[in-house]
Image 1 (tube, each protein chain N blue to C red):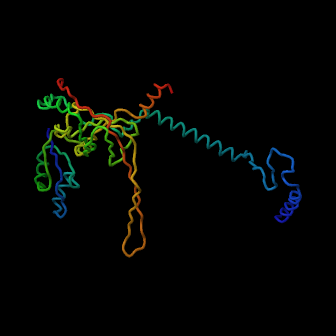
Image 2: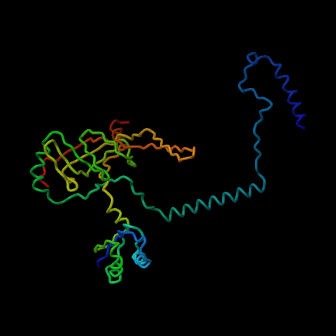
Image 3: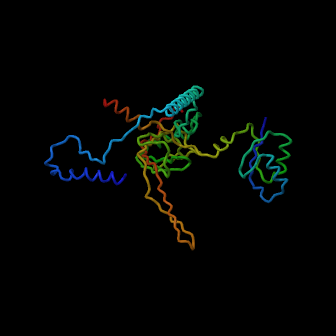
Length: 97
Length: 228
């Protein structure tokens, strides 16, 4: 089963009530918000109504909000190998303190 | 009533003033106790009302303790708090074989003296060599002086003549870079004065940022990549 990944790219300010209703039905409230919907005729028709405002991809599986956010974030680039406290404690044991 | 009290006090004080000076008086272990100093009287509260209140209070406390115990038994293993510091490599370890150009040129790069590395921390690049001290533009939460950090996101490693460029990052198996946290530094206090027109009121906004300092303690480049 494939899914639509729909991102609101352009704001719906100043657009007719009917267009804003379609966005609300898709669950899009703010720009660059991403929602996932199963590929079906209903959702395809809704996307067609707002095709000028959204960017659509077809994906295999939906993602949670946290996963979508993690896509945008950088890797920390470091990890803690040794804690300073542990090193000092080990040295203390060796010295017999 | 008060006048009578006052008079009695004055009468009692007079002989004290006629006493010889203090160094002529016999030594006393206890300090001189004056009339206006009285010991605190604590009345034993043994009335029936107090007893009843005490009993109800103790009962309530016992009940509360029982409830807390039950709650602890119901949730014996609360979800462990996720550590704020990463303890695992941030990038997945690549498994495929390294390219032929890396295989031939990396030993030459490793043989050269003096290397630099462009490490990325939270997506920000820092071009460093071994022994450099880096002041990060933020305070790294949770680290303490002496902690050893392994830096594993490198955009480029190079020497005077060669550069190994990553796409976007260099293979983590080809190098080892470590840093030791040496402390935290603070900038001088900043004062920002905010004022509106036609108003004498001024607001001073103070801020003082803290920065983590770390020293690049180790930069090793693998010279032998025959097993990759």
